[in-house]
Structures are given as structure tokens and as C-alpha cells.
Length: 409
Image (cartoon, rainbow, N blue to C red; front, side):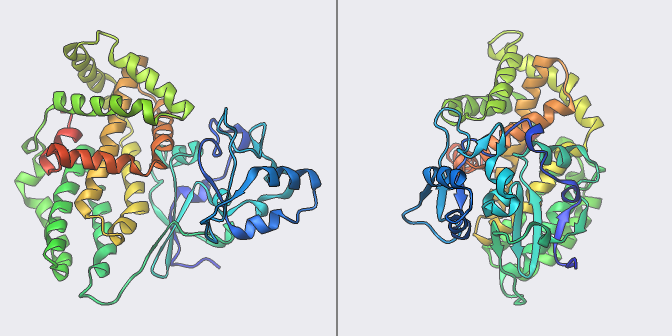
């Protein structure tokens, strides 16, 4: 029976692995964790050949835990899992899904525990999940789900709840709900909404720092009213704009880290398109800036005006899957916001350059970039933290500078 406490965005009802038809592989260059229960099962399987292959390619971790007991070796040339056979998992082919480790059986699903409730989303590093999240206008409507369908799972994050109104944790769900509500204020452009989200997060941070937790519900009500009536909040022109700063900062940061961080083949293709697009009219700052602004106006903006749900869904999926967990591990709300802006701005930068190369922006190009960008960086835990640290080092960790990264018009 479906529990009303188990929630997921609507796209999860449609998700199913497409196997060998997938453009990418789950199993390349990622650490593949094997839980102890699955490891033990592998020691007694009937197939001598498969058991021998598993023994050769499994390595027990000296300091491993029950959930992270061993890891699968990867092909040093391709990065593929040693158990892949023509793009398909030989374990699943011979023994069925029940013999997959919890990591492999669950991916790309992310299951978080929030008190007694379970919440499921998907990582956009999976091409099929990325398509479902980004291209369906109703993808981020919420439904009840039966998590029993995927068997026992490991929660990526556990967030305790409390009935004690003196504790900040009591207010976390309401804060996240308000953040998602702001991103659905569709009378404003997506960029305007993202800046409004920053205003909200900045003020929540202040109340949290001053331990004024009980004032948070009133502030949510007040902010909702302010957005409806406050001319300054409602005026997009109030917020600063500097596309040269945006281009220089983001492009320079990206170029500085690429050699050490790029590993996904599809993302490498996107980067090649990006570089060619940005320099198609010359490599001087003036030429690149002209290309950047032209591509935004003629390719990026028209596409996003027609498909406004694409980046909105990206942001909503991010907020729903990460915000409770980040608040519970004491990441300040405004820091979480800045990391979201970094992701948004980097994706926008890539897409503008790619569109300049192709002289158009399409759903296929957008999904490919977001999926491969996510895959390349999502499991590099320090990627967004390093950008946040650079914001702080450069003195850019303010709402004004976030506006400079968000706005293009």
C-alpha cells in the first residue's frame, strides 16, 4: 500500500532504465560501492565463471562500513565497471536486479529521509532522468510513491524532524517549501525569481544567525506579501547587470579547472562546442563578449522563453533533493543559494556558447549539456564548494554579485 508520507516529483512515476539504448553509462569512472550484504551474496552464486570474475574485480575496503564494504574495479583504459558486457551489466543479465548492490539498484534515484517521510528524486547525471525532469512541464508536480518497488534502499540523506518550536530544525520544511514557491512565481522571469530567492535566503540567514527561529513563519508570510506589493522587489531593473563581469568570471574559472576536472566523454564534446562557439568571431574579449551577447539574445533567450520549464525544473529538483539535507548539516541557507546560482550560471554559460556554435539551441543540446555537466561535476564533491570558496575569496559572496551572474538583460 502506498504511504502518503512517501513523496516524489511526478517524473519518477515514468522513470525506467533504458539499458543499452542509453547514450551514456552509469558505470564509468565512478566509485561503485558494494554493500556487505551484496558482497556476501556474490561469494555463493552458482555460476563459477561469474563468481570468479567477481572475485577478481571486487576489492574490500580496509575501513569500509556495512553500506560501503567493498568497491568494484574499473577498466583503467575506459573507466567502465569490470562487470560491463557490451554496455550491459553482466550481473543483472545473469542473476537479475536483486543481485545488484544498493548503489547500482538505486541509481539514479536519490532517496532522502525527512523525519518519518521518504522523498525520492533523480540525479540528472542519468540521460533518461534528465529528459524526464527537464522536458515535461508537469515533471515537478508531486505525487505519493511506493518505495517498496525498488526494495531495500540506502538513504542518501537523513534529516531528523522535531516538534520543538525552539529548534531551527522545526522550520526547515517550511523554509524549503517557501523557496520552491518563490521559484514558481511565474509572473516574473526565471532570472528575476532566482534573485528573489536570494533576497529570501539572505534574510533567512540573518534570522538563523540571530537564533530568531520563531520569526521564520511570519517572515515567510511577510515575504509573500512583499513580493505582491513591494515595487523594488517587483522591479527587475533594480538588480545590477554586468555581462562582461559575468562572462569573464565564469569563463576564466571554467578554463582554469577544465584540465583537472573533465572526464566524461559527452561533457568533453559539449566543451569543444562551447569553445568553438565562443571564439567563432575571434578570441579577443570584445569579440567573445559580442558572440556571447548575440547568442544569448538570438538563441538562448528565445529557446528558454518557449521552454521556461526547463531551467525552472532543474532548480526545483535541486531544491527538493538537497535543501533539507544541507540545512541539517549546518550549511548556511545563503551558501546553499550561492552554490545553486553557480550551477545555474555555469549551465547558462555553457548553453550560450554551445548555441553560438550550432547557431541554435534545442532540447537535445540542452539535455545533453545539463546531463553531462551534472555527471562530470556532481560526484566531485568539492566542485561547488570550491566555487563558493572562490566567491568568498574574491568578495563576491553577496546578493549583488549573484545578480551579476544571473542576469543577462
